[in-house]
Image (cartoon, rainbow, N blue to C red; front, side):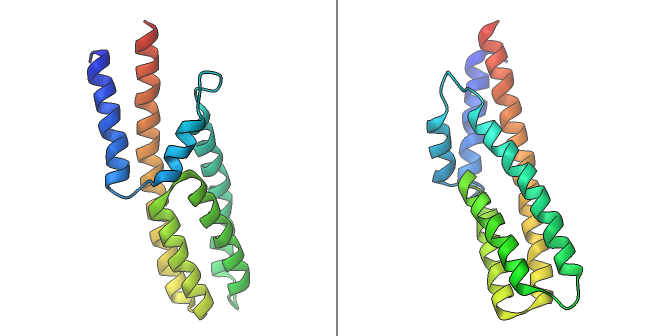
Length: 146
């Protein structure tokens, strides 16, 4: 694929992430902070997000299986998860986190469990999509230098 074709494909992938509601304007703000001095800034931030969110997911899973359900602890973890998701522009994940927090406030453990499955699903889908996007960006960068 030529350089123009690759750039066009990357632009389409990026646009689809927004059009499908996976990302919001916060992701654009991260991109605006990226420059020649730190060309992988966004990818590094997203990698940190996934490292941190993996830990949070494990903590939430442990708390969900504990009895009696500690809704205060669940809400604290989900507040952190929602904030982290929002900071990278993960729109669908952030939205699902808000739903989970409503179920926590209502003391509905079963709804929390169902909601958490949606969160993990959206989290995994976005991860795969962003990994592909960053992979294409890396290929384009290599193609520009050759």
